[in-house]
Amino acid sequence: MEQAWCSAQPRGIRLAVQITPNAKKTEVIGVLGDSLKLKLQAQPIEGRANEALIKYLSGELGVPKSALTITHGLTSKRKLVEVVSATLTPGQAARILLKQSN
Image (cartoon, rainbow, N blue to C red):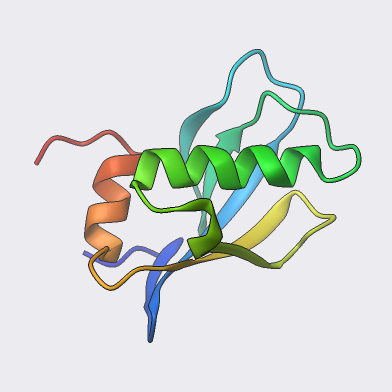
């Protein structure tokens, strides 16, 4: 179940995300076009939003923070995040992040 925002990579998966910083709480809003839209409870200052994104995704996906790398968009609202995982599939990541039960 590959989605435009979540694709398989040789060493794991790649997530295309669009963030909105300075939110009341960190949460996934849903899919917007070809990216996963997230609100982050962090300011876009000195990398705080990037740190919050990595921390949130690692907690949700159950992988160590060291397994996540923002490969594109460090200073942009649109980012590509690579997740190194031998077991996580795009379908699993989509179900976890979108809170689907199937």
